[in-house]
Amino acid sequence: MRLRLLLVLLLSLAGGAPVAAQPSDIIWCRQPVFRIPFQIEASEQGRLREVQLYLQEGTGKPWRLIKTVGPNERHFPFRAEADGLHQFMVRTIDIEGKAYPPRVEEAAPGLRVMVDTVLPVAMLRQLPARGDQLGFEWEVRDDNLDVLSLQVDYRGQGAGEWQPLMVDALAVGQKYFVPAARGPIEVRLRVKDRAENQGSAYLVLQGSGFEPLRRETDSFTSRNNPVPAYSTQQREVKVINSTEMNLNYSLEDVGPSGVSVVELWFTRDGRTWQRQGEDPDKTSPFQVRFNSEGQYGLTLVVKSGVGLGDRPPQTGDVPQMWVEVDLTKPVVEVKGVEAGRGADAGNLTIQWRAEDKNLAAAPISLSYAENPEGPWTSMVGGLENTGRYVWRIPPGTPYRFHVRVEAVDKGGNIGHADTPKPVIVDLSLPRGRLTGVDSPARP
Image 1 (cartoon, rainbow, N blue to C red):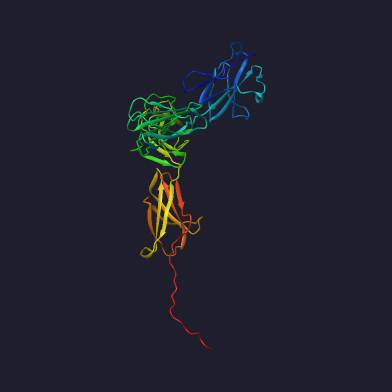
Image 2 (image 1 turned 90 degrees about the horizontal axis):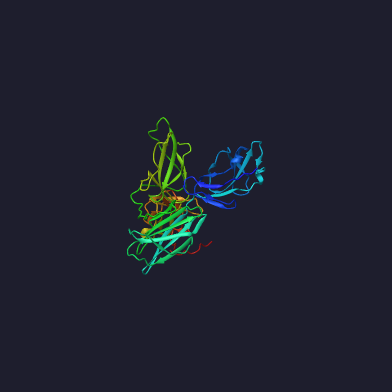
């Protein structure tokens, strides 16, 4: 039987031209939903009963039948359940029940698609100035990074056109340059992965000091609009120390047709929106998982049973909620612990340094333990981060012990530091004084 199959990948959301592939090629796709058209010669259609699509996830795994259509169909719809390599094979069954290819386990892939929906993570940070040179460092991360796509531009703050800046195509690097404009300088970095997902970062360079403004990821493959300065002030942000969370929501004004879709959309920069996914049971809470730390603006989009409801958020729309994924523990250092002497005897002065971008209110707790492995006994909690506290040692406290300083951030991450050696609080120096002499008793 002569059968000609045309395996073409069409992105269902991209709207671009089909990308044809040789069987040995891997097609990179940033969308989890696409269709696989096939073409059967008209003279053969009457001899076929059905066309089957088999999937092999990864390599070396068995083929799995995932879709069957009639010979008059023209494509298979497909939705990837996870990122990774998806290999496809098409099999036909004729009206006599004969299959081609006859043995599935010996069939070779006809189409190989690597699904990658994760955006690269990009970060920028200012370096100390060198005379009239401004400097910055960058880091970009992605499992499938196309480092040759790295592009950096700059302009005077608020100016119109961006100017390209030559940098080394490295995942981690730094750059010093003399800007053509005076005053604050905006820098943006853009980088893609092999699936054309784009991540970007934005920073305002000052003449001195350090002012990181934003880390963002962006799903656009190109943009001509200038990136405005972005501020996280004047917004209420819920901080959580997990990439997984449950979002509580309520549905209002639900009609007799019910609810067909509950979608979650998110933005990293307040401008560009992406669809995160659907709540399958359309019942609160909405279980969400994000890929990395950072702030996420969230908006819920709900459709009725007949498709009416909210439109997806657009550029400039204010999110319904902001959350920040913060997995980083506060940095804590014990600067010194000193037992009082003289009039200050019985007091213990503890000094520390605690830093975190999301420190909680009154984040400091102090405790002590005779052994470095514990158990730890609370001295005091709920202290402001003043860096110093004088503790009155209560009766019954051991005379030597380790001290621990703990700091908690708004997400519940706890960092701590301990004294490397035990602190001695009994500073008494015993002395002896002769008070007299007695003759030994005689028998």
